[in-house]
Length: 213
Image (cartoon, rainbow, N blue to C red; front, side):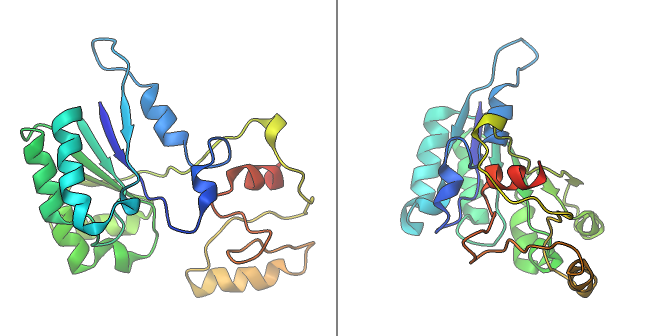
């Protein structure tokens, strides 16, 4: 039994779309089996939609009722899920549920800030897409590893029509090198799909796949 707590960021309704939105990891977990051949059950909770003053009680109640073997969280900031909430959830599971956190952000500041390190001491495993954080976790005795996930498949027959380009580059402009490369790419048939544009592809995995295709 997996209690799955992904981030559904406010203002991005496309994330909840059953075809174009976020469902790949949930589906993969549901297809897994334990050593006895029993198929997994996934209980997904959109924790950001729960009022902060109700979050602890709601999650503790779910743990008591669902009795998960694994609690898979996507905590990428010190709030709203705190170390106190994590400890209360584990106690509600009688202490035997493994807590795994996946952080899909790249910025080291958010991965290794003192506030995040304090929370991560209360998880059993921290998984990241930026392996540069692993040395810091090792120094603080936080068990961690690299786990690059994020692919969401959409059936070909449901893909929208999108323009064809010579170059397709999916990236975040998190440093000067990437911003410089962005300038170089402008010499090609180039289109920028960024948050705020009507053409943006953030969380719209069908549109992104159509551009690649």
